[in-house]
Every structure is written in structure tokens, then in C-alpha cells.
Length: 273
Ligand SMILES: Nc1ncnc2c1ncn2[C@@H]1O[C@H](COP(=O)(O)OP(=O)(O)OP(=O)(O)O)[C@@H](O)[C@H]1O
Image (cartoon, rainbow, N blue to C red; front, side, top):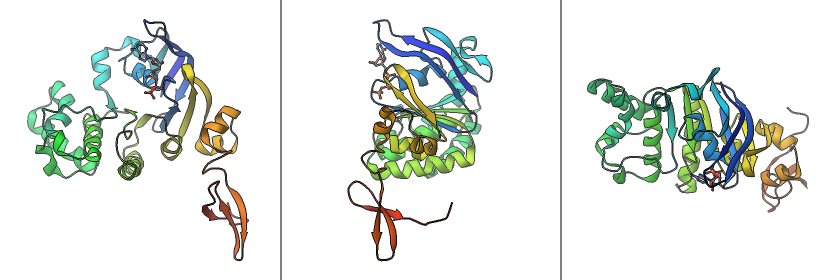
């Protein structure tokens, strides 16, 4: 479990990125932080692995404040996936994936075996291991980023807009893959996005943030859609307009549900769960 307790982050120029933030991140689940640009999502994520230090308050992992952990060891024990993969361009895929293992002193052959294993896990052909990142598609690069984050088998995986830079089709593929991976690996995932659909698709727990990382609502996707805590949340998730605003329409064969653009989204089945 990860717990934020009254966490505030003021950057040296006076920007208050996070103000008095509290959150419990349950283990073995995916928590998605979602909010518009500048709402403090990246700052929150980076305080978990001490890439950013809070100005006040504390973050605990399984009851131990991260401030008491060695920052380098802490960082190596937590997987981190960035938007552009964050791969080193002059290193082959295999060397990118084994970075943390080699830093930890894992023997070369074992590190290579493990790299091949995680390439399998993320659905990449082992032959790609000998390529350079620029010789891969955007989607493949993101998978390598995930493989690298998983190589040392961390319990926690931080993902910062990992699919932000790929086209919508590849994005959908990577999202499906992430759900499969999570079912298989059971990590504690903290995922940052500004895309509410992505948040609802991937999140067991979704945290909707407004400026200064103010929590507008925390809950499962169903809880949030069924009972938005405020007008801000209702508008952010689009229950008033957009794809989630469904209305019934009678047809010769029964009632269907139609979105605000007039597209039929499904069939209303009365009396079922
Ligand atoms: N190093 C820094 N120095 C000063 N201000 C910063 C720094 N890093 C971030 N900020 C500011 O803190 C606020 C929160 O930034 P942060 O990157 O955490 O938000 P975000 O929700 O992840 O945004 P985005 O979706 O655009 O990545 C913003 O106002 C940003 O400009």
C-alpha cells in the first residue's frame, strides 16, 4: 500500500503543484490519477520514488516513509514508464531493458535471459532485442519501456502518460495489453493520464484532480459515473454531454441507448444485472 499524508509540494518559484494531498493507493490494483494539464499528476507520481521531494507531509510505502529510504535503491525498486519510453537512443533494446539489472550487479547472462523473458511478457519478439530504439515503432518502443520497468520485478509500477504519444489504434492495443499484464502480474500500478476514458478503462480506483492536486473525487469508475461528487466531476467525465450521456430510444425491437451524437451504443436489457 502507498499512502500520501498531507503532502504539499511548492516548487522553488512558488508554484504550488500539490496542496495538502491525502490518498491511499491499495496494493495489487491500478490507481489512475486523472486531471487536466498542470493539475499536479506528474509531481504526485515522482514523489513516490523521490524524484521530487515533498515540501511537507509524507508518503509511505507499506508503512515506511519513502523519505527514510535510500533514494537510489528506492528508485531501482519501483518500475517507471514515461510517455516517450525514456529509452536511451544509443543503446540496443536489450541493454535498455537490462539497465537496472546491471546496476544491481546481475550477471550478464542472467540479465539477458531475464530481458528476453520480459520481452515475451510485453508481447515483443525476442529478435527486436538487438535493435536500437529508433528502429522500432512508437508502440514497440512503449512496450520496451514497460519491459524495462518490469525487468527487476518491482512490486510498484509508475506509469506517466505512457500512451500519450502513440496513435489511437496503437493506444487502444497498449491499453488492452496493460489490462492483460495487470491480470497476470498483479502489481500495484499508479497511472497518470489526462484522458478520462483511459482512466475508466484501466483504473480500479480513479482519482479525479483539479488544480493544485485537489481531489475532486476518488472511486471506482462505476461509483464516479453513477454518482459524480460535483458539477466539476460531472462535466469532466462528460455525463451531461458526450458519449456517457445516453438516452433511451424506442425501436421496433425494443429500447436502445443512444449517445449525444445520436449513435446507438447498446441495447437496453430490462431486468438483468
Ligand atoms: N520543476 C518545476 N518548477 C516549477 N514549477 C513546476 C515544476 N514542475 C512542475 N511545475 C508546475 O507544477 C504544476 C503541476 O505540474 P505537473 O507536471 O505535476 O502537472 P501534470 O498534471 O502532470 O501536468 P501535465 O498533464 O501537463 O503533465 C504546474 O503548474 C507546473 O507548471
